[in-house]
Length: 268
Image (cartoon, rainbow, N blue to C red; front, side, top):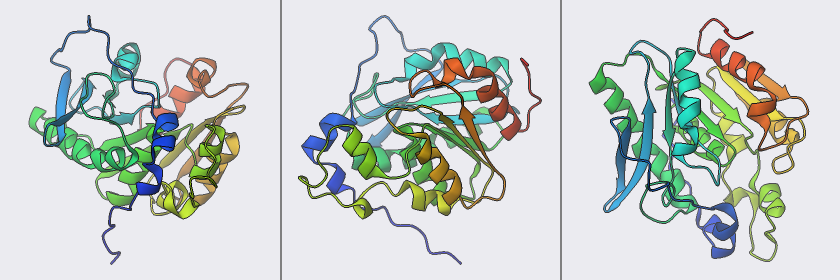
């Protein structure tokens, strides 16, 4: 029997020079009012993270989504309706300091917070009578949260989706303008995404832009190669970049997700 995972120490990534490049928190527009879709999840005494539930049916497949840096929950209000129209419940999560969330973002906090967020979301769905198991999805920076959950809760997650995810931390930090030698960073002190996906054996979909200038396609390929699943798919979105991947490849992107969660493909 595999030993339970212990939370790694992410202090090497919590240096100010890293945090100022890795996180760009943005607050929610004041005119967006709290609705029955919204929930504030306590992750620490005095700190709560915002979550929005775009729900369509109690028996429908459900995706818990961790967004990318510079994004917030409300950016996905319209897309939530798209997922619902395809028969998928879509739940979007913020990080500390993002949207209406309180607190200050850090790598340690982000990686720790995904655990109570997952547990609270699962309980909330159970209380509402939703029956389908959760698919966990992470985009870009959010791939770290999704892979942390996949590595630590493999028996409670139905599927894994990684979009624009990174395999190693050092190349990403370098792209963001961080001198990893100057800050004394070593890869083994990073997120461990490639190692974590190796611990995951459930159905997996990896989506990556062909010409991603922030996280190159080779990272998506590396995650696919490292993934421990036998049922896995790597979808390359041609001619797309990091921030236009969805708009350039919406049809194959959504079709692949529908296939993964067991729904007939619509919108061909």
